[in-house]
Amino acid sequence: MDGALRIVLFSVVFLVSQIHCQEAILHISGDSTDRDYCIVYNQSWTPLSETLDNATQYPLVNLTSTVLCNASGVSPDVVKGKAVVVLRGDCNFSQKALVAQSLGATTLLIASDQVMVTPSANASEYAKVKIPLALMRHRDFLEAQQVFGEEMQVKLYAPPYAKIDPSIAVILLIAMVTVVLGGLWSGACEKDRLNSGTAGRGGGESKADSGELSLYSPLKVVIFVAMMCGMLVLMYFFYNILVYVIIAIFCLASASALFSCLDAVMDKMGCGTLSFSVRNWNFSVRSIVLAAVCITIAVIWGVYRNEDRWIWILQDLLGIAFCLNFMKTISLSNFKICVILLTLLLVYDVFFVFITPFFTKNGVSIMVQVALGPDASGEKTQGNMVEIPAEPQAPTEKLPVVMRVPRFSAWAQNLCVMQFSILGYGDIIIPGLLVAYCSRFDVWVNSPKRIYFVSSCIAYYVGMILTFAVMLLSGMGQPALLYLVPFTLITSAVLAACRGEMRTFWAGTTYEVLDSSREPLLPEGRTVHAVDGERC
Image 1 (cartoon, rainbow, N blue to C red):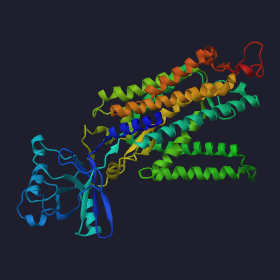
Image 2 (image 1 turned 180 degrees about the horizontal axis):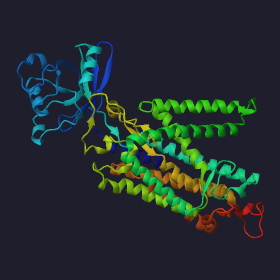
Image 3 (image 1 turned 90 degrees about the vertical axis):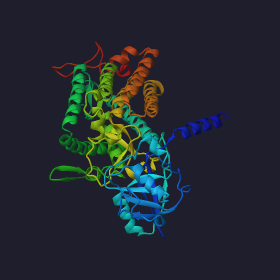
Image 4 (image 1 turned 120 degrees about the vertical axis):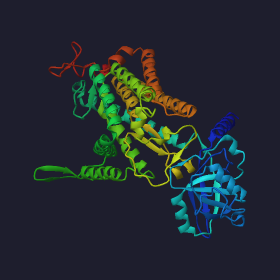
């Protein structure tokens, strides 16, 4: 009974969240084939059917030789009971619709060579028009003529899409898997160091044998965040130049990260390495093959990075590897550093999302402008108005700093312009560094059932759910760190306090670093092996 109630409740929420977009579908059919094209309409005119089966089919009459600002030269017998397509002209949409309606037409399509915006009119004009009206691309109509000739049957329908799109679940899954794997990887590396007796060499901000880098200095954390702010501002003002630098860096860094991840998987699987020597240089066959695969994937992404239909798969793959490698390579030495870093980045995220729109000319936040590119049209449109290019546009470069998943339910939108749900790498990496610290702390204190790691992962999951909930309710993007940072920090702190381990959790590793010698200082009278059970 309880399960049935939950299903009913979810169904009600899902149905209530069904909304209509201003993009719709023009279904054209002929003798043996059919195709779908993007159209833009306004529900204030005659609403369209929600499904193809319920839509009424009409023959299409080609009147692109006129703009139909008046009825001169058009015989009512030619258009009566049919859909007509005309060119966009100087007269307004309502005038065209009233003329088509007076001639007996059932539907009016306006072929446009200009940017297609939601067709609107004075409020008093809507009630006068009784037939559907929509804009389509002129080039789409020319293509349809080549495919179907003059004998075309058309249906217009506007499928509603769910505000709660399944792509959000995919984004959430990607984020959770990345954070969990990154934390487990970091904890496993820490356990290996302890078992090998090298923990004493990895306590400061120095690279250990595994290539990891530990941050211990609050000042350097502040400098790091300040550099991030400066880089973001530079990207805002010099986007067209720096975007190519970031793309090149991403290709190199993601290929290296993917190699590191796949190499670790091979080691876990126990795959052996076949080596050979050339002039005293040793080469591993496995490393060569992995390097070739990773470089190939990065190059393919670099070449086809603007192909929206499928390249997002490679970008997400490289992004996951990048985040995992970052979480494994950069480690925070104690909870104090975690608090400083995450708090500063929370302020950074909120400021550049919510505050900067008051200072920019177009009212778009610097964070959104940089993440989505200079023509972030999805964020610039007002209310229910949309803008769809009528002609092919040169692709605009976007920073590879987000996970992207197409919105599965927005069929009409994707037909017009590909729509994506996105999540920034920082929303995975920043809380992930805290999760990784909790995983290492579990190793240090030998905590049962990885309680710190599991608790931080649950807190991250709840924070992500709240982020998406607020985003859906508000209808605007949210700085995810605003929810993730408090949930993860507070959960970790409360757990440490309840277990009586707050002091050791705050201080982290017992090793301190002297700036002069870079040697670890051990507690008085202890050795490296003597403190093995007191790594907190």
